Image (cartoon, rainbow over all chains, first blue to last red; front, top):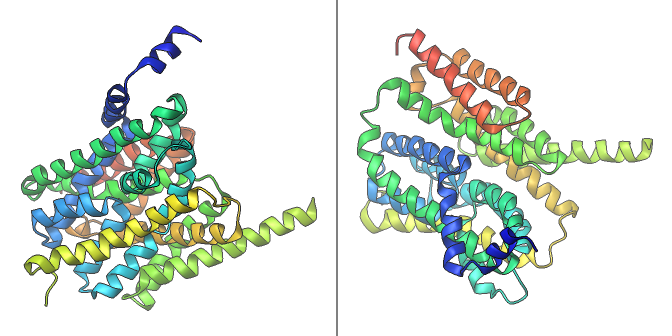
Length: 248
Length: 114
C-alpha cells in the first residue's frame, strides 16, 4: 500500500464528509450554481415568492423537474397534471439512483440511509459521484457522497435566497446568458454522461417532438413528446440493434 | 384556490415536486439492489425520460421567457450550433460547449444592442 492510500484509509468519517463537501468548487458544481442563478431569474419572471423558490430548491432538487414544475404553475396546470408532468420527467432518476447505489453501499449500509441520501441525487451529483467515488474507500463512500450532496443542496438554497432580489436588476445580456445556461448545460451534460446509444436518439427525437407537440397540444406537450418521442427512439434503436445482430 | 395562496403553494410544491421526484429516487434505491441494467423495459424508460428532458430543452431555446423572448430565434439556434461544434471539437468537454454557446449568444446580444 502506498503512503497516499494509507493516508486515505486513516482519514476519519468527518474527513471524508469534508472531502465530499469540497466538491462544491468543482466545475460541475460551479456550472450548476450558475444554472441555479438562471433558474432563479425564471422563477422571478414567473412571480413565485422567494421563500417558495428556496423551498422548491430543497424539496425537488432536480433542475429539469423544477423547470417543468414552474412551467406547469405558469400555465395554470392542476395539481394532478403538474404531478404527472413532473413525475414523468423524473423517471430518469430511478435508473440513475439504481446505477449509483451499488457503487455507494456496503452490505452493512442501512436502506433508510440510502433512501434519505437518494434525495440529493440529480444530474450533477450523479455525474460527480460516478466519476469520483472510485477513488474513495468503499466504507467511506456514503459519507463522501453525503458531504457533497448536502453541501450542494444547502449552498444552492442559500444562493437562490440571496440572488432572488438581485437577478431582476441584472443587465439584459447577463440575464439572457444565465437563462440560456440551463438548456445548454442540460444538452452538454446529457450527451456527455450518456452510457447507452438510445439516449442520443431520444435526445434528438425529444428536441424535435417537443416543439411539434407544443404546436399540436400545448397542454400536454412535454408528456406527449416524452412518451411518443422516447418510444420512437427506443423502437428505432431496437430495430438498429436487431439488424446489426442479424448482419453480424 | 390559486397555487399562490399560503400553505396551498407549499402543498402544491411538496406533492407535484417533492413527492413526484422522490418516488423515483426511492424506487431507484430499492431497484438498485436487484435491477438488471440491461433490461428492455429500463431501456424504454430511459428513452422516454431523455426525450422528456430534451423536449424541455427545446422549449427553453425556442420559446424563452424574459430578455431572450425579444432575441431573434436565429441567434439562439446559432449559439447552440456553434456551441455543439466546439463541444465535439473539444472531445465532448461540456465546459467547452457551454462556454462557446454562451459567448456566441452574448456577442450576438451585444451586437444587436441589448
